[in-house]
Amino acid sequence: MSFVEKKIENYIATLTINRPDALNAMNDEVVSDLESAVQSCINDERVGVIIITGSGDKAFVAGADIKKMQSMGPEGALAFGKAGQQMTLTIENSPKPVIAAVNGFALGGGCEISMACHIRVASENATFGQPEVLLGILPGWGGTQRLPRLVGSGLANEIITTGRMVKADEAKAIGLVNHVVPQDALMDKCKDIANQILRNGPNAIAQSLDCIRKGVGKSTEEGLAVEVENFSKLFGTEEASEGLTAFVEKRSPKFRK
Ligand code: DAK
Image 1 (spheres, rainbow, N blue to C red):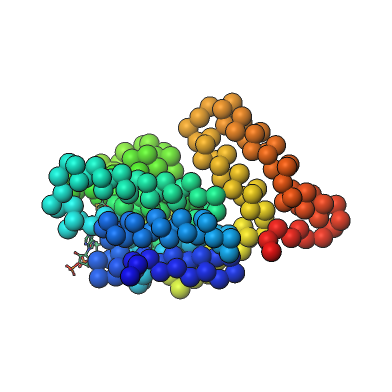
Image 2: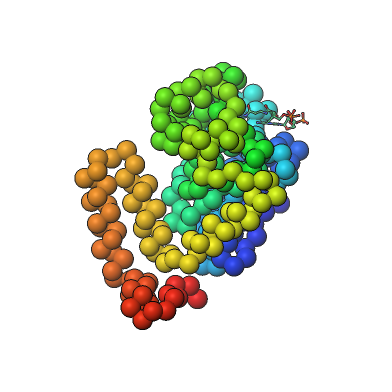
């Protein structure tokens, strides 16, 4: 049985991390199930946008499994760290946009999973944080890299070294999340965003995400080189031909079957 439930409807795949008795904490199986579920959505032409959320109304993911890490030595930690990092890279490199629907605690590995997603929407009761230093460890699934990219190094330094909690309204103010909505409106808000995305060309979306991902941290010139390459590639696709022709013919483009 998988710890991740998958539901596909109208090109939107909803992946629910389902380990409620441990507030959806991530052990090896949950890491592997989430990565497989994301990969299967990437390969599935019935999917255009992926939403990741947690089961229940209390937690998105309360972190990597502390009970598992308690007995881990440096070798085990290296393997667990690499597996978690690979899972976050699969999310971040997805050519299909991934939206985190953060429905409660997103701590440690949970915050890191949300930051690997392309878009974050939080419910009003969501709480973010990288409390690893409280446990004598450090964020090992990308927190030290993605948090400063999202909120700047000054705030990331503070959030990571204090390990303090960041409530939803602060997360919105510092750019850690895009939107904060009441809990019962969370999935609808994510689906609204997904439906706006689904009106657009899948290749154009994928190539845009690729430009953004590859450009962050590079010089403008290096980023522009990726951009012009991807821009030109799109002109060889039926999708661009359909989009440009539909505009001229004053009709809506048809990008998906
Ligand atoms: N791991 C395992 N079990 C957890 C858990 C976690 N992260 N978080 C909660 N649980 C379990 C609790 O143990 C409890 O289980 P039972 O005692 O009932 O068996 C159940 O979930 C309900 O939790 P509470 O009773 O504590 O619920 P409360 O509402 O009182 O508190 C809480 C909710 C989220 C404030 C609290 O559970 C909490 O502080 N949880 C831990 C949060 C945390 O510190 N998260 C960061 C984990 S560290 C690396 C790889 C990965 C990472 C780092 C390095 N390498 C290998 C390099 C990532 C590290 C982390 O994510």
